[in-house]
Length: 263
Image 1 (cartoon, rainbow, N blue to C red):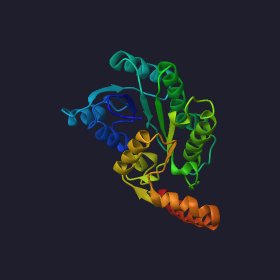
Image 2: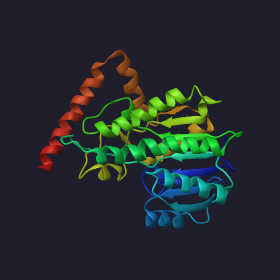
Image 3: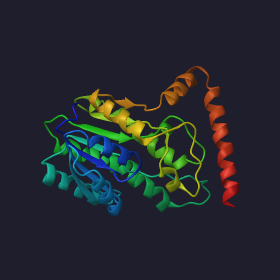
Image 4: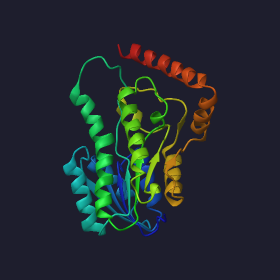
């Protein structure tokens, strides 16, 4: 799908991959509604991009509930008269050892990482009825490869992967739903996961991920793997399962060292 002159929703636009995507998209003539729950950071990001070829507008909104997603799509309809591309980038992580039952803790991450993305797709289908669209969900390399410390976070991304695999059979065009599988991205994302969270190996910059996402949209990809190293690891794992176990053993050692540092 061409990106030029499209109407685009981008969530989590104030930082990390979202900010890199906003900077890349703003160089293309299109209409962007950028959303984030951090209003001041979003305003600063938009102000820094004034004068770019894209038409930019922002919306401070909490997307961890249906009312927030409804408000986002209502604003998109009012400001852009519809949506062609929705990039559900908003999300967060936990880096932790699970020790106590905590329903609210589990629910919070699923509401934003999973429910919000799926509900956004349902809203997009309704709004774009009869027209071609693209839904982009940011999954994770952890959808395929479990990493110690990220059990709950990884499960949210695996949920998106399984959802997409099933839903593509229902779509008129399977490429209308594109999942992106970044590896650890060098942003403050991991600092939000927990105090002094170690960044898993390998890692990449948000600009690399953003560029891969735009290429994926243009080429009608169903899946995008921004890291060639990670793609090679997945391929190698098919023939040498020991690769996975060695990697996970290394990350488990890192996790235990982190735990000791928290005590």
